[in-house]
Image (tube, rainbow, N blue to C red; front, side):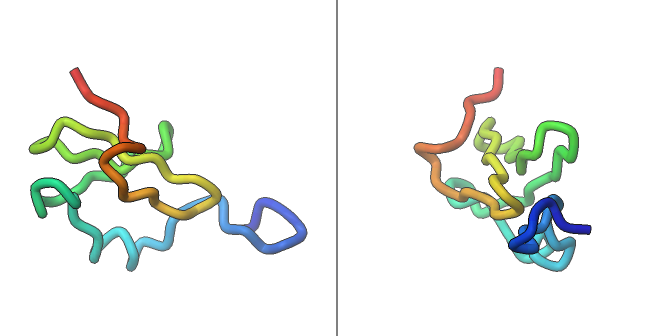
Length: 65
């Protein structure tokens, strides 16, 4: 399924999610489909996914409580 005429995916490829790790802790990430974020429990950060692309920069991440 695509989100526009340019075939931009509206979801992240599951194979990509399996290979990504937190850039801060190098730990596992969990995918929050509803919020479109990759969550690092260890770093207490949520990395945004924009247009199907995970933004894996700590300065772009949202701090978790």
